Length: 301
Image 1 (cartoon, rainbow, N blue to C red):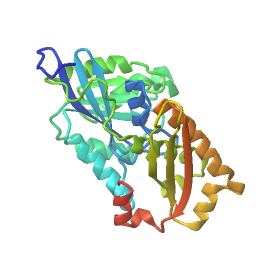
Image 2: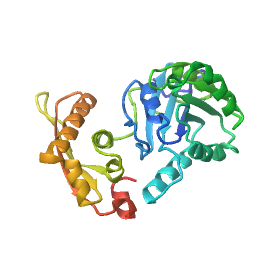
Image 3: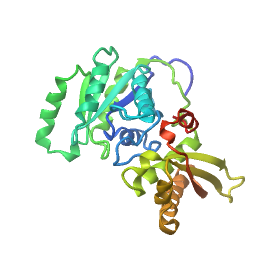
Image 4: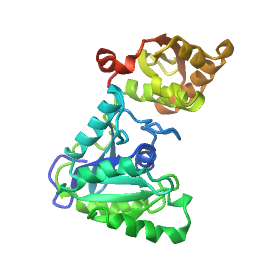
């Protein structure tokens, strides 16, 4: 891909906004054909803005996966929501995604209110249509049509890919002519350390109880790339929790829970780095870190 202006080439930034658990990260991974954003059945999995770049012969679409918008409680959640809402103002196009199987009316209302005076194009993706009856889809589309003047509404399934390509073609047509912003071999601006930490955090969501994941943060203490084809990528990471009791839960009886988190994380990281990985996990108690602004900054929030 060259850096000379092509009259037919289009590029632009797109914010993916929605309530917690609407399927934003699943959709981004589907669009890119690669996993760069973690997913979970638990709400509020995404904490940071994650950028994914889709390269096509005639356009480059830069997607911003944002934290789920909700009424925040606590400093961490406030920062997450502020990050999501501020991203809406920094893009060329907004993709609003809503879960039709489990609507989150309070959170969705916050986004609708934010978008009422927005002059840039807004596309609505009604996600998880595979989880409702087909004869209800038209009713849902009609209901949403009365909430905001969307450029287009697409009933989709991010999980199965239903009509995602059709939606992408339409969004591409809305972009302005311009240069590609990034080289065509670049998938995301997130560093390897960030993505690895997110992969570990995803496994904490999967293998611990309802409240534990929200009290954890992951930092990468060391990341040593292999020196030759036969050596390992060596990673040391720390799981930070808020209380001693949570440390015991994450470690588990005889260390079994931490071992499971480590094993599953290592498998995913090996696919990501395309090589063998040695992963060492530690658990550290950082008292009430979600209320500590200095700790939040240190953990990247």
